[in-house]
Length: 121
Image: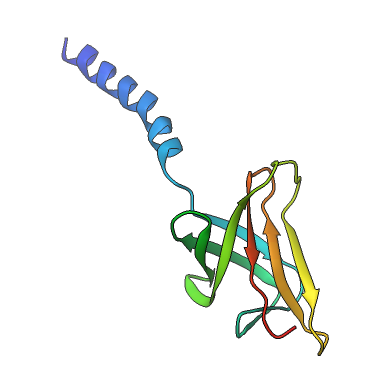
């Protein structure tokens, strides 16, 4: 009888765990940045970054983390897209001094994108 009770409890927890994971707000994403880009006052080198954002509504503050350390922060607008992007897409603009300025990150297979405000163009 004890075995059946433990089996029932384990089965219930196994079924509930994925639902809890889906209910979390996912305000983070990893992205590969292939070239040097300017984000706010910081020049990011090519590599993999973990992006975390906080805020309510569409206005968010994005942190760029590498190896657990915050490298840069920047304000951004969280926008909805159609989710048809097959890979992460990094959109940049060129400043007068030929610096690449990060404009937008579209996440692969996601319905979210981050649009960054640019300055110094």
